[in-house]
Length: 487
Ligand code: ADP
Ligand code: NG1
Ligand code: MG
Image 1 (cartoon, rainbow, N blue to C red):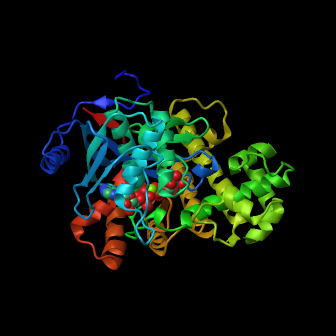
Image 2: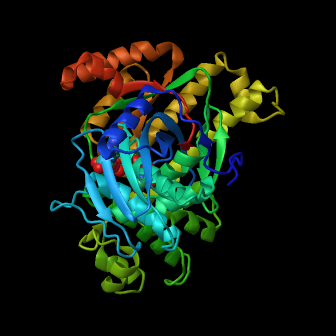
């Protein structure tokens, strides 16, 4: 076990923190035994790159201060005892055997029980260990990431569970490996997400966002301009992504769009192509050119299942088994053009956001070298305002696309975005959408006025929240560090 290997999830001393103390006492009371270790996994805010991780395109999230904190006690017997400090979350106890036998079922309304996320994490860990494990666990969970709000509370919970279980078996995988494992584990809840949430949970660094790529998974630190703050504001519309087929519907629409585009390029239907990124590679075109190709190859507003089967020269039954999920098999209509357009355009915005941050850094380091954009930034009267406007516009465009092409916004999110716009502040929904939070790019000098405006014009006017609670729902944030084990 190499404690100092920077690729491994770090082991740190248990911090002096009242929240850790409270969780420790809660665990002692609940189980009449001592905590062996704690695990902390942060939530995240995705700055830009929404609904494109599962299409193979890079994204740009940062970790939050808010986290899932877990206290764990190692057991000799193969059992799980799961508790939560918040008593709205019920206790759960079970025996464990093999990952094949660990069933994860939702309630009668198709909503996952909260502890199903813990079970997903454990199931993934047992699968990774090929059923060779020797210890069970007692777990107490304390989370302060607003749940079901696009800040990735689910992945923090799954990842903290996987990490706890592996550590209890004396296994500390490296960060990229466990990030990919946790992304696979969370799919047991029923949603076919990409790996963004788990990647940032493990690969985050303090003070910078991460530019995350797939296959192979890499994270590159991106310094954000110092004169801006990222403000998160909750619309107070909560939505559990595994309780409906909205999320998976988008995933399969992108898959089918990729498949149809690949077919148009002359590739055989049984090729492995399944993501829009792979299709781009197949065509050998840049993002702009792909956007033009969509207009040509996917002209219709909607495609029926039968039309897609014909385009792919397959049967509806084969379509079900190869590309659809249990909760999307009953769908009869798919929007391929709109979803693919959003994906390629959003991928382009991520590149532009990252490049602008890098160009600003080059300029600050005095590395101009006749680069046109850098010169333009350098020559602008107020560099900071100029950069804020470029980055902010990308956020506004992203929101518009998510609202109109991807259809995953919510009226409360749109209202928050409009209120922000009134003050000249660009913002967008963050996370999967259909509710949850916006992220706004706010000049540092305007943060207090902006938060005050949100309080007056959103929280006081439309929501019944007390003044002290507003800070919990609207806050400026800076990039935090990733998952840790406290021993
Ligand atoms: P998010 O955008 O926050 O990831 P999801 O819909 O993916 O939203 O997952 C939210 C679900 O995760 C909640 O409905 C709940 O079941 C679970 N969850 C999140 N935080 C906690 C917590 N602190 N304690 C228990 N369960 C939690
Ligand atoms: P949230 O909103 O945290 O559940 C989901 C997916 C991400 C990504 C975003 C949209 C999971 C675990 N998370 O996040 O992979 O696709 O939506 O960009 O499925
Ligand atoms: Mg989630």
